Image (cartoon, rainbow, N blue to C red; front, side, top):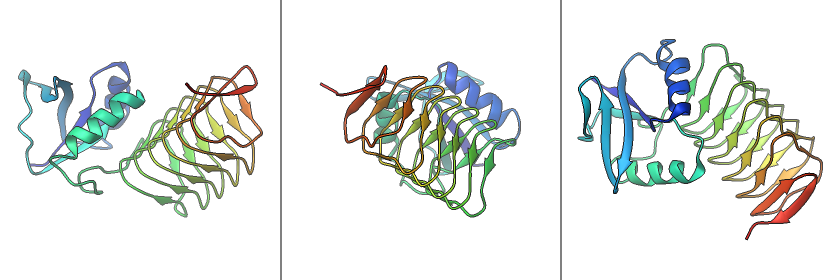
Length: 206
């Protein structure tokens, strides 16, 4: 029987478990996977055991830590192809994902998150509770949207960005790659790559 596993076992993984598995969005829960010294271990009903990489498996990223997300994806991708079978999109029952949106793979939409009309969403993005993307946005891969982060219409966002809690991205703004936007900031100018936005000031990351 095919099992679906959560990659990670921290507090956020527990939130994903609560909202996706306990609410029966997915009913074939296999356990939590952790990595130690580049070896995968399964935390399940039988305690902690080495993960055996069953062929019929799928995975949900259960961490908002960008470093760990990269590490999990790099490890699991050695054994499984990156496709919708092994990395499904998971949508909490009270999230809203527009039927006119386009989704890649491995995206997670938690409770009360919203994707509105004509949005294009790439792969492995994580939309935490009450985060939102308005109409006609284009969002790349592996972006983290913290609780209440909101992206207005006609925005373009690249890859590997972190949006803190209550961040607002105003219409038609362009955000590059690997940026960090601190909680509560309102972004009304374009951002390049590897920048840090805090206290209304954009700085280059080291």
